[in-house]
Amino acid sequence: MGKKIIIAITGASGSIYAKRLLEKLQTITNQIDKCDLVFSSTAREIWKYELGITAEALAGNYKIYNKNDFYAPFASGSAGYETMIIIPCSMGTMGRIASGVSDDLITRAADVMLKERKRLILVIRENPYNLIHLRNMTLLTEAGAIISPASPSFYSHPQTIDDLVDTIVNRVIDLAGFENKGFRWQENKS
Image (cartoon, one colour):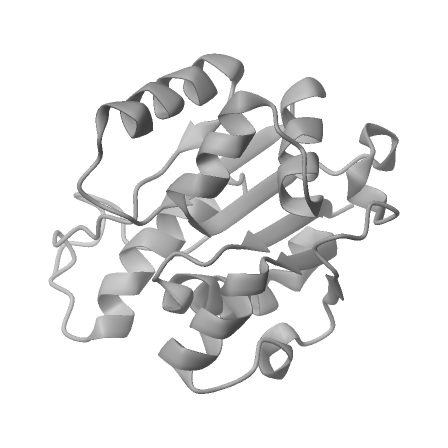
């Protein structure tokens, strides 16, 4: 049986990370029972600006929920979702989650993941960090979240922007507990 996951996309720059994640998840559908999406208002605008397409153009079979739909299944712990990935995650969203403010579906779902002791992965994209950001990251890590900065690695000798993006996306897929054929240090030698 596959996993039930939530993908949340906020307005931080880095829509390409979410796009590549959705594309890669389409290749491992045998590991996914259900995947639902939610976009912040700004995310839709940034997505269109950075990628030149609408969010719906890449959603595939995944259902997109309105950011104010508190009747979405994953607004409750009883729905049994195992993983939530916020990619990219703005510092504002991270701050609201760290403060326990559940004012939209993204922050409510993140709160549910933390209270249910499920996997919450925040792919933060902004930099540099100020002290408030760092303290929010610490607070969320202590609460059980995984902070995964969108900082590409270069071990695999990436040649394109997609290759660089994939160093992050493959790591996120690993963190989410899926089988994945991404680069492995000292296993991919030529």
